[in-house]
Image (cartoon, rainbow, N blue to C red):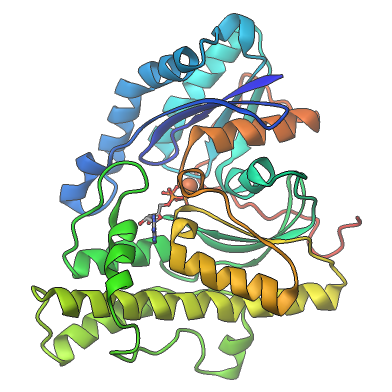
Length: 363
Ligand code: ATP
Ligand code: FE
């Protein structure tokens, strides 16, 4: 069966079509990078208006690219139900509900972060990645460590207590006055990665977050706002010249290096937690926009392969950032599990991914 997925939770208007044999049939996306760049962050109203303007043509483009007919060839409509910006979610959800209801197709509302996690089961080849796996979701709005036990069954081990890692990348990029990279895989985080590549991560010292006291050390939560401030303090303390490319590159590398160590610190605790619970992990999955960062990927790969003897599964970069394919694929997974929604469902802008299975899920 074929699933059409619609994503409008944030600043990308995206539509993807996937079949139940894990084949990507089509995708179309309208980015809003250029629109939001002047304000340095997403402006919710602008994002909503743009979804409103472009969603119909993005849906048509996805269908036309693969010469598919909505009524004849699409069997299920999937859509992001939350979490995300309320006005933006509403645009996608209304479109999906209307299409599904009018054409009599099953409707499936999906959790945006669960879709980021499940994408790995679409792209992993040749075998589908089995549960349970440890998942690191690092994106613009979230920094989560989850154990994925099954469809709709996640234990949340850690989250951020302040900024998300993506937000910290974006704010640090702004502090360093970097221009956003344009187009697909673009944005502020990608611009910072480019600079970090040319910089020396050990030129400056910044403290690694959550290492100070014993309790914090044992916590699986993240904190990224201090790291961004540490970079700002360095600039002020040493009166660094941000017009100097080398200075920018070294600061970008310092930030990225410290952020990566912080990620690993807490993942180590998560691996230990799983071991203590007797959970035999099949893989470490990393997804979300920040997981398209090559340096972070290679560090995670070393951790998974060398320390824990499991593979690291990362979707390709364009499927790590927001896209319609991941929503369509989550639709495939949920449809197979018989999880169909009513045409009356509403969006859920704040929606936790954790559920009551907590620590006692039976495999
Ligand atoms: P969420 O999924 O939490 O709702 P989102 O969908 O806005 O948030 P994504 O599209 O998954 O987030 O990711 C966007 C974030 O990823 C941005 O903060 C962006 O700067 C960051 N990002 C993208 N590419 C890179 C990269 N190469 N290195 C670091 N960060 C990156
Ligand atoms: Fe996302």
